[in-house]
Length: 468
Ligand SMILES: [Zn+2]
Image (cartoon, rainbow, N blue to C red; front, side, top):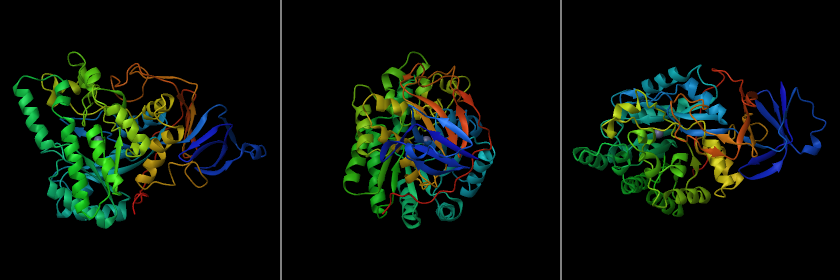
């Protein structure tokens, strides 16, 4: 079965050109000068005239069905990967979880059981380590060698839940330095934050906005800097800061990178578009929709502007979503009267490609940088390149035909995520996902869905391409 995507403008991290893409089975077999593709016979033709053709999006940070705060993220692997596909994302890297006291491999097996046979698009796993001890360190080696899991997430936040102390972090970093894995860090000083939370609650400050106020930028910056220092001590262990939201934290990453360190970071659309005052501070309990950690930052400070700048300068390498949806009903509502009991997370896996394309429209990013931050760099960072993240012969035929003249209106009424609200309700994007192809199969076309659960396969990852 062959497929020719014809007449489009192929956009990649390194350039933009009119080209036709020939797919045979699940792979791209040729990227052709349009003048030479006239003679090519294909079983199926996709007309991409006037549209961009980009590699399928890779969301390197999702939490399908994550148990959190007495409930679980509301998207299953089935609903979440289907929503991702609708939005032009053809690969997710989700976080398998080792809870404190649990065997790492058991946590991984549980994640495979949730995902296996249920995904609409390809998927891979990072591993969350909830308890770094001798067994967990051995498990890191085993996962890198045998399971295709080459990145491990630690938490400087959430004492008593996922928290690792500095000694545990250092040991995991030393192990990663040896086996080539990446350490991913939730960088917030959770011990200090818990004090601020208790003080706020004691003062009767229970509304959602206090979730943000008790997690100040200084404590994200402090933890980011500490993680960078610990990684330095671990002989420059590769370090990736997740969901970076604050200018002050970005500054630490920028300095480390200027010094040639193996330090990388991502941000998420919520930190580029949403704020402490306008969303988290919405009247009544409404702000609960936007409770996530790290929190939304103040619009009176230059965070969002700095984050866009960081994306341009590559101090921020990737945009991921940290997709972790909870419904208002029965989930976010658990924190009515106590913001600390609101499940942390925002759903956005469906909207990342569009929201960052809006950055192109707004003059924040080039077209090439859009593709790089949403697809190519995630593939290279996490050992999926060149199978994913690039349009070239031999790569998987994961393609998005993107219509720059279309518009996307985001609403809970029309989205496909299992959420009873949208964090981006009413947003209008000057662009639209027209068609989505996953390993050679057209799964979204002209507003219709043609994918199926079970099409998505587990991806064993190699080491990051960025390490020296
Ligand atoms: Zn996360």
